[in-house]
Image 1 (cartoon, rainbow, N blue to C red):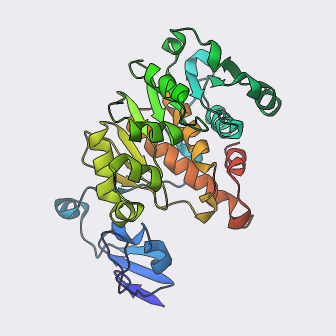
Image 2 (cartoon, rainbow, N blue to C red; image 1 turned 120 degrees about the vertical axis):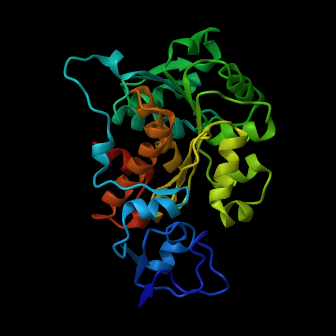
Length: 334
């Protein structure tokens, strides 16, 4: 079945189904790639998506274009930062990854290895000492720091701080999050760190990327999950504005927005194999590693989302989506 412009019953702006919708094998969208074809139920209704520009010039199209920008790339490897041969580990930045508490060392391990795999020069894992053995066995390249023995100025020497994977929401975790609030390093705020922020909205972070999944976004915005997913674009704009940050709203067709820019970037790549616990921890590490190598907040977020999604698409060429696990994504970065 072929749908012309947009499958009947599908909202071309939000990707919502109005009671019932056609499920096409192919959708030919006129003039431009419509946002709603890619998000929420869009892809399931559209099948393959092709765009017929009707010979309308790019100049004319720009007069009518909205703020949604589809990200396009052939290979995720083209998005990795270039490396000069005359360089050393200091040339590629230093990252502190904070988490793995509450008996969740695997979360911060996934972040740490993905951070290294995209090229960060030095990666330090800040976690509980009881996790040291397991992390060193899996990733001997990691530098480890005991969260109970951090000097007051510990974070001052890092280019990037990523906090949240496996952090927990204890009072100690909250205090640790507050301790980096005024550090000048670029920050990636994810997972439990976002849950702490949702309960303490006086916490604000300059020079930061926040990476909520829809349920975390609902907590941050004081909305229901259904309300967030009903209009993901508006939810993303609210997140970036309220927290004065570059925001990534994860999920099917992840969205990215910098708070001072009107554009919303949407990622048409990725698949349902990513819908497993731990995938977001890998994304956190990828974004942190890109930041460490000098990418801007917006570029690190956009490129990180695309690299993450394209790795998943590469993997399902040779394995079933059901079998994909987050550590497979890291292997795809090699």
